[in-house]
Length: 612
Image (cartoon, rainbow, N blue to C red):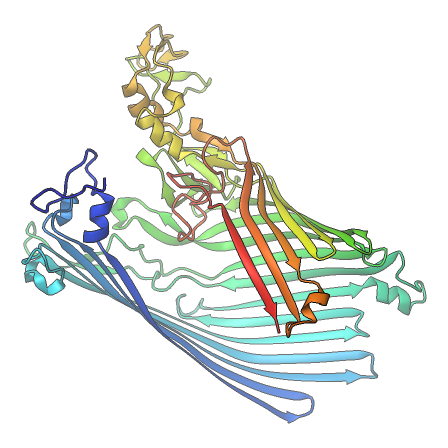
């Protein structure tokens, strides 16, 4: 591949129809540069001993200049004579916050504090985009090196402003019993006037049991029950919509098939506007306890939580006859409930040797309780696999992290409905073929200290959670998967759909079957994504004080850390810890899709720490 040029300087063409990577390095550069300014001003004033006034004003302004060039000679069909795309993004977030805080103590036992304030956040994002093709001079990549009809320019502007007032009241009795009351009201520019104000309160409380028992003369020391605290909280949080989704945007289009060839039509690339949107709310309840025993040598922290999000603002698909592919609707409701447990122990404490261990456990279940209208699912299309065999989706009365995939066509009795040639057929509607959410996750951390040496490592555990192996699906299509080793013939157990009679047709399991029939269903590519992983291991040596006494150093330590060292899993791909569209995709539809990805990097870090 390094021999990528012909004698005349053109690119050597290799089978596959893609540009040679070495040619790409030289002829398809991508550059990006950012200029950023961050400014913060703060005023703090105490007019009385019990009152503090604070005002903060800050802005974050940055401009990103991006350019992508494809020089003439590329195999990309839309850039054979060269192409260039560049955009300038100007982003600014400005925040203004005023807080007045009053604190007072009565009888040395009762402590009160009250904070009231105002917050304003203003966001502005402007993007200028220019594209051009067909360079006049094939050696000069520039927008100016094209004719006017081969250029296009566009601009987008997104603005959002939210104004809020809030209050925060705290009370405690002898630092034993705590109560916190909070409330906020926001006005947003992304919801139509009349529904754009939303109020949300919260309350939390906690009790330090050990101190309360001492106060009541029921406990005298910390030998057995060293520390205990219980807590509970309830909150209601509001959320507005993305900017500019309440009205339908238009696009300027020139055509030659109408009486008036110029004008504005609905921009099908943007969501169809919905002027009926209202804010969504998430109500959450949580209880927990922090307990420690035997002079804090053993401890447990337990949390149970339950939350429900109502009137969720969802981007859902609509019929193309609407003039767009998506629209934002209220109506989704999602319930989350789970537990989190942390166990810690100083298992061994000797003069020269110590061992501490921490174990965490987490279980969460996300169920879709409601969807807008008659929808039975919402497609989370952050990642599609080849031929659209599967995608992420949230299913009504099912998991928020389901897998929406193709399955074989069957009748009500579960029998395969075969084609006239005797092969299975993919049914029209996609089905729920998996749940990417794990049953539970856990981590076990150990630290061993022996004199001046320290060894710590963490074992990361995930049990359950499906992964769609799109890499295997791609290998099947190219005949490189072990799933395609059976090249014999088979009579599929099913009925011919057109006749209703059992099939007796022996069909060949050739490459055409695997590539155009078998790979189009997704069920056989869903695998269990459980793993046991040595996430890291660190060895540290601290130089003894006897040596440091001869120097001006207060501390000297050498460390070696190995990361992602061991992976134990039954998953057949490279690594079940995957995201189909890479780390840059923010949606929940991407994780759990192994889509031609690469495994996580195994690495070793070496460090030296000096303390003066």
